[in-house]
Image (tube, rainbow, N blue to C red; front, side):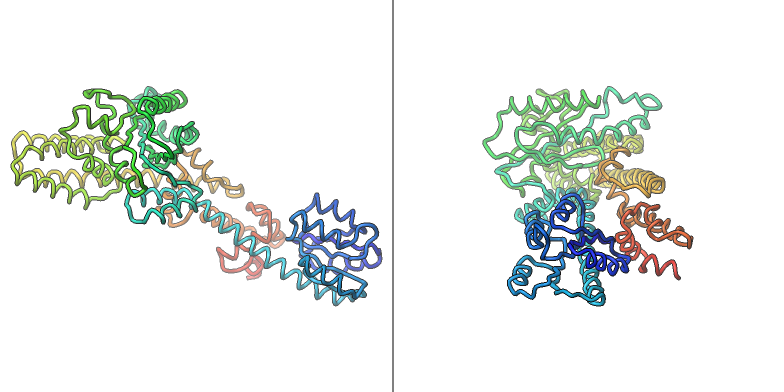
Length: 539
């Protein structure tokens, strides 16, 4: 339905225009006799088009057009009606981008011709607005996933720094800086509230609690008064990666540490959960962020190591290296193992095992023992992320590997680590699949119950205890549809049922399934079914 305003001082002509335009079902007509009345309506109402007489008592039609232009109402398509065949009037009207300029007297057939042309123009304009709206909706829906993908590409070094900065700009994320570092934040399973859920300290209560506080921790991190900008990403379901950006010289360690401790206490105070932090070194370019991430991963593994000096919830890579951990292999290996496990990259893990053990064993050194111990330590740390993981089976496998070490059975090390790796990766896949399937069913149940209401993915995700990007990605992976596509599909299926009732208007069916704009409903219906609601009903 389009709203059209008639501005004409002569009553007979005004009412005649209104009668002809009322023949078109697409238009809701409002008629006034002066420019002043028109301005009042334009200020308070919403009009798509205007039929405007130039010669009016008091304020002229051109004055009204000036107002429309000054107020930014150029979307109001205007038809000028004039009793004067005056070139200057026509020129000014063209300069003001009027839709049509017609001379009196105007026949009803001429009015119908102009209104028909106007209707097609308005439909085209409405379709353009709809396309823009749909595109913006798609971008908004995909934004969390695109942002997560951006972080993955920063770590994978698959794009140039210029390409990464351009993608970040598109996502309203400013990654332009003189230096960067990665801070990893991981909720600690030994939280004071772990036993609050059903079953005391059991996995079910802890799982529920972690989901319920996940979004809250993210919000605390984002809203925290950082001295230098931070961009936060969900690393796994329960962990976070922060890219901190600096514009000046490096912060002094005491000030920096004090700020991170404030974040630690703020999270603990507001959620009751303790977190561990691993902090990488500052690097100068985005392409080096991967190295800072590996450093942060290494520091995070040792953040709760009470056997080292300076231990605590916030551990810098430089501290981990200086605190008696020199016997641990290169931090790159620790970070790469954690990264590969999280990303289910078994080939990289087995290649690392093969190369490291082959080189070390050929040199007859003790380094393979150190590598194996570090590998097992990282594996157990990652497994601890998952509440329903068969941790007992993994520990049994680890014990078998330790027995091999005691027996000096070096020939069996590689195969034992390969077997452990396969077992852990399979367990992670199953855990994620179970979590995602349960999550998808909850999302579907939510939509079936409230399909006629507007959906907010961030609100839904918060209610379910997950991040928006995790919910969207999990749903798409399990169903092949985005959440909004499924929501529209459910609405359209409900609408099909309603359209079979011949006594129900199409506009009424649209409202019942949540579409207040019949034109928008028709477009969505056709997009999902291939036919219009009217065609579907008649078929």
